[in-house]
Length: 160
Figure 1 (spheres, one colour):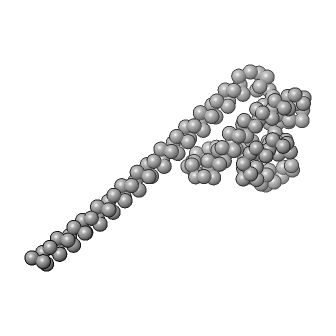
Figure 2: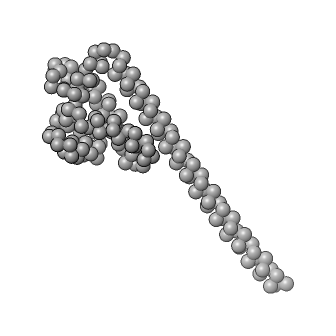
Figure 3: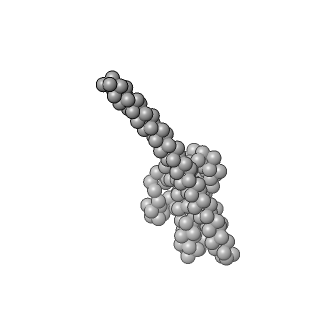
């Protein structure tokens, strides 16, 4: 009888171990699905920001003109327009900085980053970004993003 109880105890331990393993597999699957949901939500928010920024920049001819000129040739704007341009361009830079940081923190899939990297690089390689780097305004951006911008500009032969 004692051997039978020991056998039952051993069987119970084996069943318990299997149940724990199954539970851990289930938790792992749930975490993976939650990660996908978080990434999808992040990508949705980024897309919403893209649309919002584009709509705001295009809300008037004057805003569209200032942001376009600031991005390409900030020195050709009046002082007042440059100040306005810094804020408009700063919003765009903040958005691409967010994309960069989302990628750095592995919140964007490689496919989503690939489709957004051209936008990020387009901004950091622009003359407007060069003007931003010279302005005290640049201290309000993440250091790793600013460094990324400087490295990209250097790779493309753009002087600060």
